Image (tube, rainbow over all chains, first blue to last red; front, top):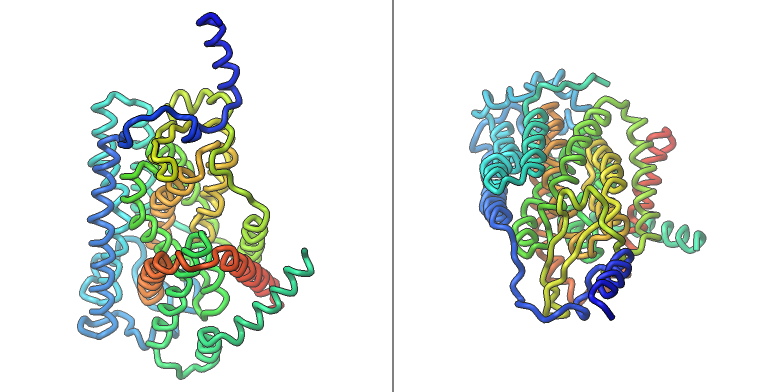
Length: 166
Length: 313
């Protein structure tokens, strides 16, 4: 069989091939190449996600034990948790958006630090690790995807977008 | 088969009503003088059990959280969905590093898909927060019932057949390799039908944001069966991309005051500890039995939510 014929046969098989099955692969080194930016991003998530969960635990203990004062004491929250989010804000006068940052002396708002920390991780990882890595590689399509994602997440986090009451 | 499912559902309903946790929740719901700390404690215990069951059944904890907590606890659905997103986000962030390092979650596959899903999860979050509660309950009931049916009929494929990669997957170079321990070798993979897959992620993102559900139940079939990613890549990338999809919706809920720490924090801790215990129990478990139980629980919670929305529950 000529080289061209072999290439054509290979091409035909490729049009409906089984996803590469281990048994059919040549023996290669066991190590799998993982892009460096993926490893760095994984490390950021590893340390920061557990740090965020640690902050959640710590601030929750401060809140429920009463070591830090509360805007709505835990014993009274049950009066409000059956209301919709909009009614809750109206009834309690609690702030929306980033207003909670000015209320960190209260244990219930202090808890939001851990939650916001977890929700910021993706934006930080994209901005600090992935965007520079794709720009360095001149991988413009992924640099564009990462940039748009940063914008989308920042818009969501900004609190600019508002929802109508129901 | 339907009769069998209905019979099992009634059995489960009875079990759920008789189980100690459910009884405790029901009693506490009907008692206005219940001490405040009972609720976070019950929530912690419930989500701990949920975390164990989710791992054994091979489903995400997020998909169980909203229907079950929404059905049995006295919290408004806004706060349950807000907590559900934080639960799914924390779980995805904690699982991400291991999956990324093993290349089971692949950035070239996850990033474009996550962009679509996270954008539309914002849209979904706004729809969910703007809809009247009864309409939302009905939509949630229908979605959860659909998910349960999807679990019954969907079959995954470990190494799906993949045709010629399309223009989008070639342009984005969506491919990779991972180490397959059963063969002791790396496996190369690529995807096809990328535009169709991307379109479906619009719907997945919207549903995830609207109901605060982790979307693994939809991500995996689309990545695996439609786009042809090997099952391990589909599961790993799905789990990782929840950390991005749920981030955008979580911000919307947080900014609208729909995240109550007293509900969200015990739930995150319960489900994460439960997942750790579930992983240890997995070796001795019967995954099929547990999975069937989860399907029945979802059917029950879905129908209950539907009836609640219609004012019959």
